[in-house]
Image (tube, rainbow, N blue to C red; front, side, top):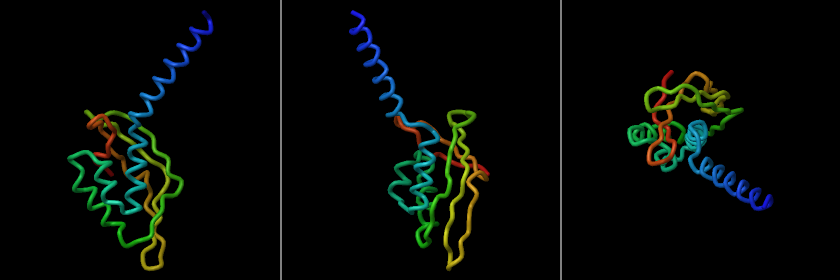
Length: 128
């Protein structure tokens, strides 16, 4: 009897963890967006964006199209709510090479907005 109860408990916990993993998180959505941004992957950026941000996503891809860029020490964390959005702040930087010169962008200078759309967390704006 005890063994059956333990098995049921394990199954319930596994189901809960799987449900949480499928939903993702606001911070993981922004991290995925930033990774696609430095890779200049327009299709992935649009996929990771809410409908209202898709045009901006295409522009983000173009801004990194002709440069070599990488994320350094990126860590993002969800914070306060702003209406239907969760505000996400990140630490780290984007390092991009322009004409042989390395320029960095501090990720902490921007607060990102993540919203749940279609059951998934999506990038949906930013504020400086």
